Image (cartoon, rainbow, N blue to C red):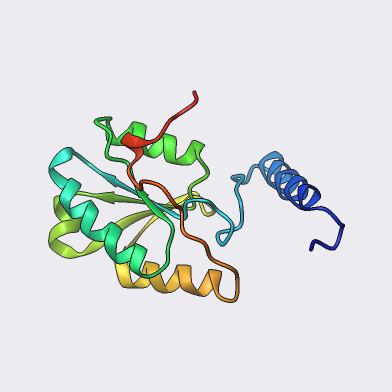
Length: 150
């Protein structure tokens, strides 16, 4: 039960807060615990799709809502769409990441890219979402299988 008496008012308040953030020049978005997708994995090419699936399994096991942009688009387009979809964390996956196990993590809220190990990202997300409810994403985690309205 929401304090205002109706769940739609809470959703309206969240969207209004996002709008006000955007007006201040900050990126709009949902709180991390409420974001439908918390992490999006963007392989630089189809060659790294199996590596992306491995990372997907690790993050899913940690109860992090994650999806893989497995479409045959340029990396720039994948990242741009991740921003438009208000994804809090976007990981780029390529040869360097596969070898070194250090990822380029685009943090939407800060509007910057940080290098970090997967364990650090998991720890960061767990800390931010601690004591909040969790539900799985449901459906396929692969963008190529999802319906898009644009």
